[in-house]
Image (cartoon, rainbow, N blue to C red; front, side):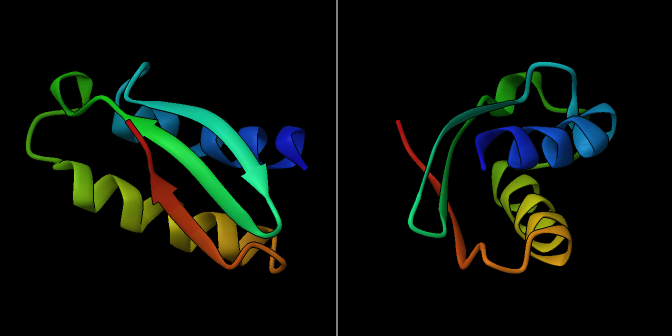
Length: 71
């Protein structure tokens, strides 16, 4: 499951900034990520990054219920 989620993140990563997101874990349908807002593309906040990722991940991997940001 980690590999599938990482592939989706990699697809959207160019729009977010190369190192803006780190996949931490996937547990029981919940994706845990770290967002480095200082490295995101100009004008894209951390909340927007999470929303975009969650939509894309859930579209491609329907069994994912939620995307959470962790420290």
